[in-house]
Image (cartoon, rainbow, N blue to C red; front, side):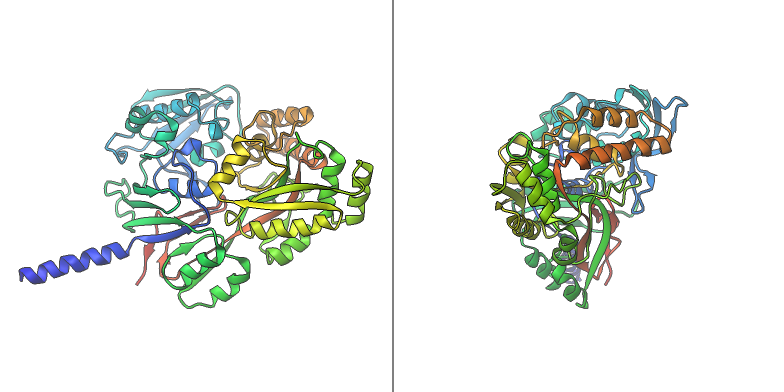
Length: 499
């Protein structure tokens, strides 16, 4: 009998181990400190460890998480949240109003520049009303404040972890939240291993024993991993493989709209991109419709604004239709009748068809006399280059506002001094209109202001406006309960395997 029981225990352990999911990312993560995260792959991992007061569901509705309810003052400057009781952080620290205050005070006072601007301009103070009530006092009425609190940067970090590590780089290596999974192991470039939080406040969850995240830059390899059953989910499946992969009996291919725009930015501090005629010329030289049809296989729509067509306050400016002759005319007028040579840096595997898009743009620009050298690199190296240096001519990148609205596109990417304004764009009229929009409570008036802001940016052409993308990923048919958020978050918090 003892031998039989021992055998059952071993068998149970094997079955339990098999219930951990293998999740393939296109690139490696950078940090697991929520307010210091600059990329969606890191956000995906962090969203399994941490939780915020509120969040978006799959339909972009705001739903309660660590807060159970909230009220907003009549003048729009005070937001009072009533907190969930009986919740503990993964290190045993209690979740309460003091923890919320400490987490936000840390964000507002430490060098977490990537996401500090989300809240520093708007939050005057965070006040503890009682153990389970916390109040945010704003400097002025800020209409999308609840949307901003849905951003992963607002997820609550353990006060005990803050006391222990303090330094953002260390805290980012030792994440502690209230979420359904906790960090077991992180080997940069190889894997991030999460295990079930046995003390999670939602009874019966999570259903998975763990998640192993692994970075694989090659899209074909990611697809094959799912097809052969050696992985359970893989992001950014090459679009040319999607139809073939969807015919596999054990694989589901998921295609969903996102809030992400993909664009090629110019370094306006460098010639010839300080010349608006050059920037406009390169926009006319790129055939966005062909990119969407051929490179993206219909899983993208041409962009005519810095704001995604799937965001409520998007305004269709008309953009730059494909006109290579006009591009040549503008280049000649700008003093470059024979074109010029530049470098375009791009990630490979971070976005669907990112490298392939860069090569297609290289070919299109060559037709108007512009010689482009395409350089690719690993994601962490790429992020460091575009965020920590100005050593580039042109760069391909995508942006998805995890606030779910337009201001967190226009503000971080296009205002003076923002760490994400890596084109070094500045237009005082644009910034004046954007500031007015932030303080405008009336939705229609705010929409009109944001439309005007978008028109100014498109006219100034700090980017080549490419396309809005759909996210495409493949998963095992037996993996159920996967949640897909239009902000490009794919979550396994409620996932399970069906035999």
